[in-house]
Image (cartoon, rainbow, N blue to C red; front, side, top):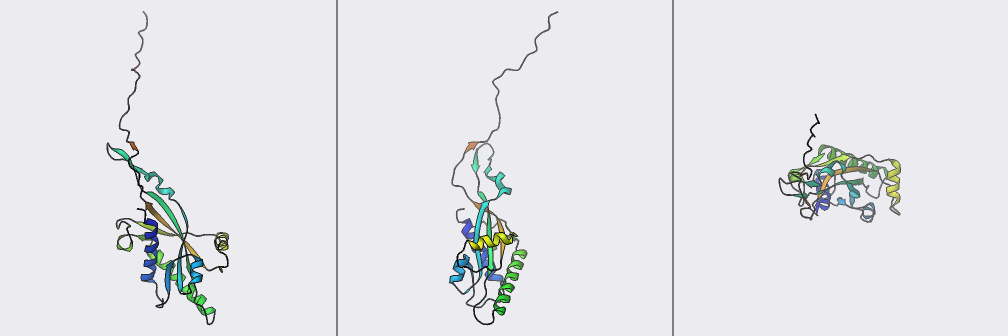
Length: 198
């Protein structure tokens, strides 16, 4: 379905909102970039979609056959990469807000570990409730983190963790593309062995 990427983002945000402990009424869990989070001082946990790639493990499912009918184009499976960042509250002793942000980060990692497979009523929007979407911790190097944050001008580096969410399926709007091969015909006659002269 065309809304799958949006619905997965909503699913992650709602899961965190429902399970994070210690949020004040003004604290926000938001699907946002670090730039958005800096502009809004109430964001405590930011969920940032920073990369989308084809899901290599599911490429063989791009086309599905139907008995004697034509081949149908199936969904396009995608890997979504999210950067989870916990932001500190401003003001007061800087040590306290930093530890507070680290506490939220630990909770986020625990929640995603405990909910490594999303299915059923946890899925939001138009995601099929019988679908299974996996969340996997995706380690990234310090160099990659620095490069990612370096692309965001005037944004201070924050402790973050990356997650892979897969498979996220975008349904094709194309119709049948070809008929399934069920038999083949040869135009060559069977070879006959010539009689050996006596």
